[in-house]
Length: 235
Image 1 (cartoon, one colour):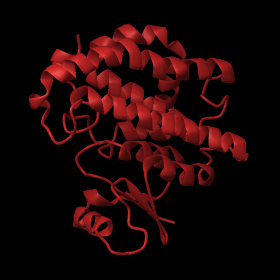
Image 2 (cartoon, helix red, strand yellow):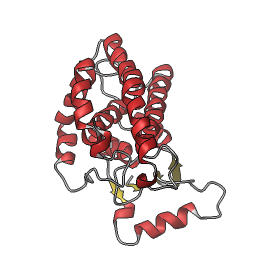
Image 3 (cartoon, one colour):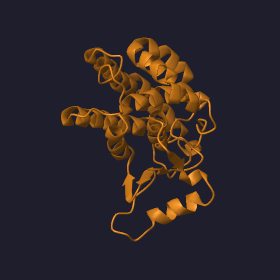
């Protein structure tokens, strides 16, 4: 089966968590909105009048299925590509961790848009600076500290033990994104989460991921995505 992934063509965003899973698995897929009239097709699928249209990208077309929401897509792909445990309790546990990642992604976005997405960053700079300060004092330690403890408890080197799951790929993306958006803060903080940092390095060294990161399929971080670098926010 050839998958069709639909996401905004100029940013990594939430689609990147799906791309990383597809790339690591060596799956046959096309980043549909980055080709020809793919973005128009994406919009038509969202605005369709069928019984189950996707609300927003990312969504994945797999045969006759159209699956929306990042965590839901990964729940589907994981067991089919060796990126999730077979037993239901562990499979649901990995899904639960992916939903926690989704919560953290919202927190990241809100550092530069604390008053909402309808305003430009320039219209909410004071609020963004205040929110970012709280993000690094309270939220990053809470989330990354949680994942650090999980790796230690699992026996490592991954969140669910010795075998990589799709949530490990997503945690890799979180570390990469924080390094881009907040290089100074992240450099100081990483010493507190050595297991998370080691997991990031293990993922980056995986052959398919290493090849992907060096390819033009990996959209560079930029100031239109979730992870944005504003010097004034990175004290």
